[in-house]
Amino acid sequence: MNPFRFKILLLVAVMATLFFSFGNAQACSSVMHYAQNISPQHMVEAAASFAIVPLATYVKDNCTISVKELGKLTDQFGKLKVLTVVLESPTYDASGTLIEPGEFYSYAVKRPDPGTIKMMMNYAKSGKTDEYIEAFIKNLIVGGDVEALKTNGLVYLGLASEVDNFLKPYQSFLDKA
Image 1 (cartoon, one colour):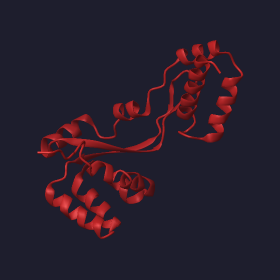
Image 2 (tube, one colour):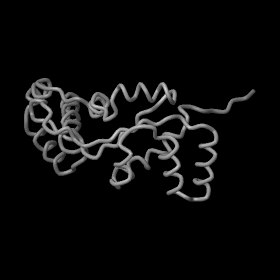
Image 3 (cartoon, one colour):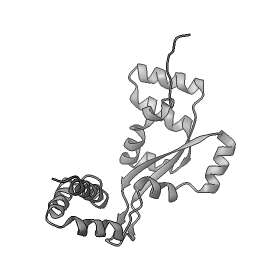
Image 4 (cartoon, one colour):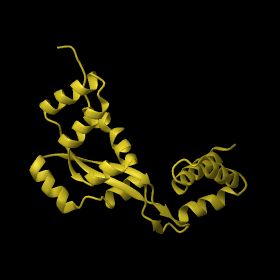
């Protein structure tokens, strides 16, 4: 297979993933089969005819926490991160027009103080996962749809899976003195 055709097939795989709910294997397989049976020129023309907004950009541009609210929270708590749980990705038609906005929940999360870290580390070391996650929610989430965390298990699971990632510093290392 020539490199150009491989790049086109890779593009099709990425597009299939975006179109068909991030990883539907049957849909991705169908598109790959289709891509192998059309000319590369048709694929280039089709790819250039429309652009789909990447999920991260769409979520950022349509954050469920208003800019005004984020500004107030930043003034009150300092630097924040926005943690987003995506339950359903947005759906687009063939021309790239948004059909369905999907379902996602955004949460403003403040930086932990040393006391919160100590408390959470104690829960983690003793295997108290529920208390660990609850401490994160109660002490660090300062904005967003907290009610969804109480009523929607998938939102809770999505947030719980990111707790450890959030609590890691960007970079830390040891070096000789």
